[in-house]
Length: 349
Image 1 (cartoon, rainbow, N blue to C red):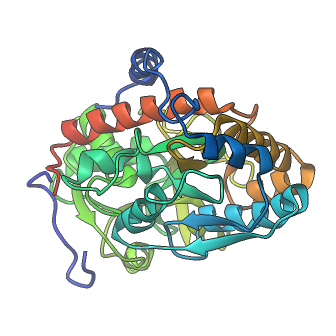
Image 2: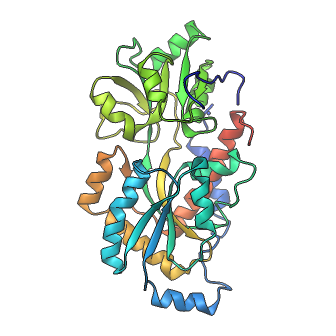
Image 3: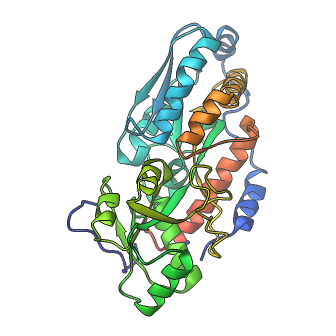
């Protein structure tokens, strides 16, 4: 972590690479075959499993606590998947260690289609943050589909004199040591966005990492100048007049906050954005992966589910991705986020 980082006493606790970075990473990763997608040397037993699948309940491991955007999306999908597949589909939350406990558990399950995982964009950053994961996100999983896009908001108090990102940059240049930003933690997407703003604008905002959920509370009480937090939890506070959103990352404005510009529109582009997606253990038969992909994509495309996802301050993925498309995108994300982590000076732990 940069020596500009401090930790709040009340809480335990990128020069952006433009779209060309992601495109370059995608070009490299596209030449690598997606692990686990093909039956290849899979056993005859797995082939038979694919033919009779499903014949018993399916478990969706979600490596995050209940109530977050990914958890809600998984629980939107589960009953509709159950209707399509004819067997119970149960969401099981296994939070801890930044999503690593649940991901490690999912990676160790038999690749028979009866355990799948939904997770968030931090899954792509984990290899760059941790020396030992107990799993490899690229080789131990097969991508199924990308379900939703999850932007982050750059937020200040509603009574802040800052109305735009230009105002923020001007303040930070006038008072180089007086501006601080809260994030979800060192190496998190919100931290990397803040460091990107620093580099692009030539400013030195102080990073205040939080590992708990009270960054927003500290922002409202004035302990930090701004916070970069998820749109799902913070949009109600913006609408209630308690916070002001200056910008969001990604390519599009949120329908729920149509007056909030993107960072790109604000002259500080940050095209990488979080997501919620589905994976299966590597070696899961291709037939099962493709069937899951079709079913989940069809559910997300229904007006009911699309509306619900928009209501969560998320974007349903449109058009839907195939397993191969999502695999290429995911590997590009792993590489692109990794470069941003290193450029921010974050040391793996």
